[in-house]
Length: 247
Image (cartoon, rainbow, N blue to C red; front, side, top):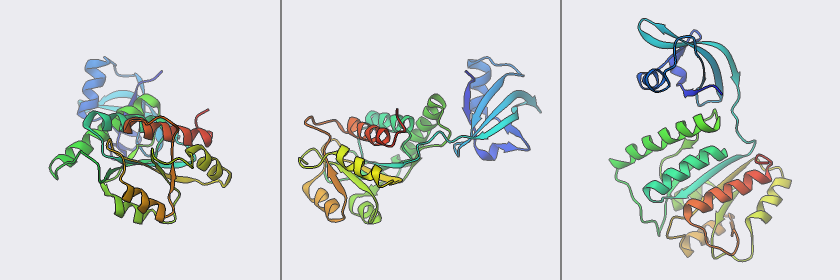
């Protein structure tokens, strides 16, 4: 299997990939690859390149020999809106959402959320998540980056999702299941879904009522209460399975 590397589209010119210093060091020092080695690159926008390693003006480059458009993404656009979780749990959610094929992730500020980031901390955290996304894409052969949106407040997010297909996982819901809703939507050939998950402290009754008033589907995942880092990933997996992306 060829080694995979991320490259920004701005690093490609005249079928030459100009490899940044960090990746160049990894290729030369860690992997010990030499000129002439064939590598796989992806640009995060769905394009994949087969390119041969070389040197140009003492810089590491790769000459593109083949290029295809291969997003490796589900037909269904699935957006995960995740109540902010603690540091390592949020990292895990970002990693696994990327592997599953989730389209985007929006961190949510909610009533019972216990994690908050200052204006100074937020850019550093997003940078870390973006790095996790790229590393996950390398591993899982996904060629389109998971989009990470800025933090959203509950009411603002819901207002922006009017007339969308929205699912809220809520442990106190007893009448309606996720399977029931996604089965119906699959038959209707819905092509975009927004999945909302509460934080470690769960969602408040007022938040759930607000979502219900805006026609969101409030559902449960069964008799056991799942951790926030588990609920969204299981929910996403079930939805993508129903759309026959996960066989």
